[in-house]
Length: 318
Image (cartoon, rainbow, N blue to C red; front, side, top):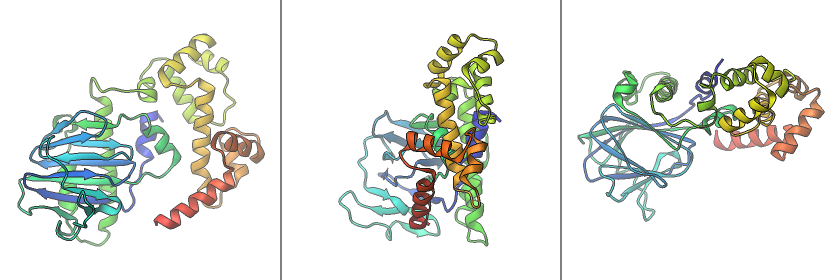
């Protein structure tokens, strides 16, 4: 499985926050929901998407934007319109001075905005990622991804826009899965679009030498890999492989492998009825003690503490 497939197979929405917004100018929304991945899909009209640390991006009907990271962004009718509403965690709407606006912007089931007949219609989604692998792989994405309608070539925005306002049995699960598929389609379209700025493993996986090396490390983390064996597999010298890998990926091969093994282990440790000993052997450590030592050295906590903290965090947010 290639690295992009692993990324696309990792994220899974669950009780994702989704709204269909209907807006009339002037309007400006500051998205400060603190989710690790946010999505804005334009159904009609034109919007400006402005990250705090970047230039405004214009998006038209059919375009989709993804914001990676928890930093706020502003979505507005023009790049100069000051925010009049801030969306906080849980899709709670407040004014810039802190007054609650949730009620007066509620237009019905998953409908939101300042005008039910507004000419600008958007889908707003906050995606809660689960899993160390998803976070590790998504870290290579740029802060903002813009996929225009002609690059996406998919009816998913319209389908999700229609489904989002329905109240049918199992609708939450339907919306989560549609959101999953839309996210996958957008990332795939961005990844294959000429000129997309790629870094880290995104760039490396297309390299004729390092791409196959990444596949080996991802598919067989338990194998006792060495730089020498990897170099032999791709017919390159050890020094040349190490240099090329570090240049493209950002880490030396063995450091990357350690990080990947521990990310896989962190996810597996949260699965029920899984022992630390079994996880250790799955990811290339000789014993539970060896995995625990590496886990604590790299992450500052033991596998048991990781399980406890994750369970505690899940109980607070679930």
